[in-house]
Image (cartoon, rainbow, N blue to C red; front, side, top):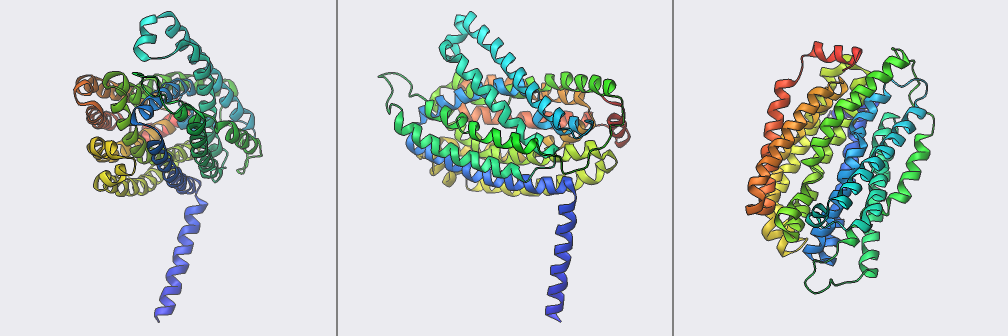
Length: 448
């Protein structure tokens, strides 16, 4: 009798897994969870190696430089990591041309943003001195920003073309290469800084961007393959669709600018307001908690993509993906809060002593952050980018306004409190602005 029950339970579980795998949104969510686990484990290994091989000031300096590059890239990406699936859901034909068009658009926009930033830094001497940017390195930083844009957007394009299974493979390969390049860079670059100078973070910078050269071409080859899902004819005229997409991107860009200022740029802000050591402590805790942030984003991207294709399933898919994601985030946040000190002790005593409360504050706010990200995914699928932009502006104002008061005195912990408070304010805003089911469906049909 027990054997029969066990067999039936196995068959029931197999049937459940088969149904979940057959649903593109749930399959994508599960695959991106695998991506998060793989990249989190390898990413933490990278920070352990970096903390053991480099002084904390070098980690802070390198992370601040990477933050500048990623901010330029983030402004140039036009949030296509979140939006590419929504836009490609209405692409005509096979969609390959549209996918590469979005990729080229993001790379070109990043180059333009980088050129403008370079011109401003070169022109305003006080800005270069304040940010510690060496003008001669700007062309290299802009090149790295363009490379990062192509790397970041590839995930969304692979998901949109139903090639999600390759995402954890490519990102895992990138993470392994990143550790290898870090070890090589530390061995080859000068080990000490000039007397009185802050140690260089060049090894961190090289490890972040060099592996992209090997990963992006593989992604491009896969994106060029015929799409797994059969192409469908768009339900609106091409000219109308392009106009709606242009308005979608333009409005969403306002939110992108605000979002970059209160996420990607934070390590650099800590560096500028509180010094290299505090930036290094912040960078370690930030990199760890970003695992939970990435997990929520990785669930949100396939969710928004499938909601854009099947808006009639908005309530069902949102509920199922949100429940699964929040359970995992809650477990992860609890683990980080409880084991923050021993986790950071693997990096070194400075990180353990100063970074433990920082990581605990981040962990406590992660559940709010996950809810916010998933709520915004539903608005994005409904093409409500105006509401998203308003939420992100409120989000940025809250984080930066509080940080201006807390970071100069409290350093990394002050920024953690500012970030946590910002999630609460932004979540309150998105709950007030979230439309009804009828509004969401109408938005998908008729545009922003």
